[in-house]
Image (cartoon, rainbow, N blue to C red; front, side, top):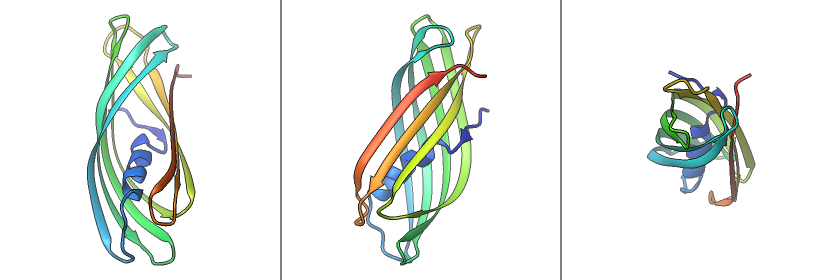
Length: 154
């Protein structure tokens, strides 16, 4: 099973879904969500276009502290399958539990790398993810930017 290096993609996506709801201070809220992933990108390791599809299943427990902060436990499971224009197929899997604190009305940026493993003789590649979210004080998202790219393992 492949592990993500750094902060996971799912953390960013869950943060977005979690911040879209209004939460009462001191009330624990459990968010259980499946996030579809559909992305097309260029694999520089062998020159093919790869279509990635999959689902990130995420369960987050969030408690606000009444001082503008939140305390979160996130469990996630992600599975990605890739189909390349040269006939190659790829797979990326990850399971993770993360505990993190956040503040409302603050911009957050997350960076992650997920190894995509070839099911044949094609070279493996890395999926690089950059996500940025800016949250308003009422919990809604004012800005959300995502960028996906691929690279070759070092």
